[in-house]
Amino acid sequence: MFKSMKYVWSENINNLYRIKSISKYELLADMRDSKLGIFWNFANPFIQVLTYYFVFGLVFNKKAVDGIAYMPWMLGGMVIWFFISPCITNGCNAVFTKLNVITKMKFPVSILPSTVSMKELFNHGCLMIILVFVFMFYGWYPSVHWLGLIYYCFCAVIFSICLSLTTSVLNMIARDTRKLILAIMRLLLYLTPILWSIDNVKRWPLIHKIMSANPIYYLVQGYRDCFFFHRGFLYYWKSGVCFWVITFILFAFGSYMMYKLKKKFVDMI
Image (tube, rainbow, N blue to C red; front, side):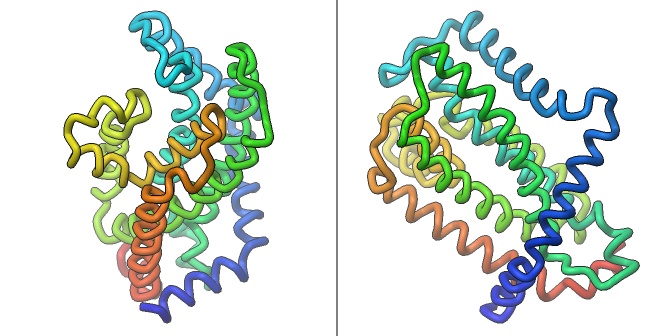
C-alpha cells in the first residue's frame, strides 16, 4: 500500500505544471463555449446567493444563529459547499472523461482528480469575491483571521482529491458510481449542518458526534470560524483529527486502487 501511495504522490508532485495546464485549458474551454465567457463564473454563484437569500432570508425568515444574522451565517458555510460539491461529483468522472487521452498515450492518470479541484478553485475565488461584498453589507469586514481560510481551502482540495482517487476508479468499474455520488451529495447538503446549526442535535449525543466527525462539516465550521468566531484551529481539534484520519484512509485506499488498476482502464471501456 505504501508503494502505491508513494507512486500517486510522486506522480502528482512531478506533474504540477501539467495539472495547472490541464485545469487552465478546461476552464478556458468552458468559457469559449459561451459568448459571455468569464461572466458566468461570477453570475452563477451570484444567482445561487440570491436564491438562498430569497428562500431562507425572506420566505422562511430564519433567525440569527450564535448572534450572526442567518444569511451571512448560512453563506459562510455554503461557500465551501459550492466548492467541494463539484470537486467530488466531477472528480468521480475525472478518468472517464479523459479516456480518449489515456488510450492514445502514456498519461499519469492519478493527476486527473487534481485537475478537477484546481479548476474549481477559480470558481471558488469568484464566489469569495461576491461573498466579501455580501458580508460587508451585513457589517462583517475582512480581517487577519480570514487568513485561516487558506488552511481550510487547502484541506478541502486535499480531501476532494483523495476521495476522487477512489470514486474515479470505481466509476470506471461501474458507471452507476457517479449517479450514486450525485444522490449522496444531494443528501449530504441537508444532513451536514450547513443550512441548520449542529446545536439542534445536541439532545442526541450519538448523532451529534457523528455530525461532528463529518469531514465536510469540519470545513464548514472552519470557514465560519474564520469569518465570524475567530476561535482558532485548536478549538476544533477533535473534528480536525477525524478529518485528517479519514482523508489519509481515503488517500491510502484510493492510491492502492489507482495503482493496481492503472493499466486496466483501457479494458474497462
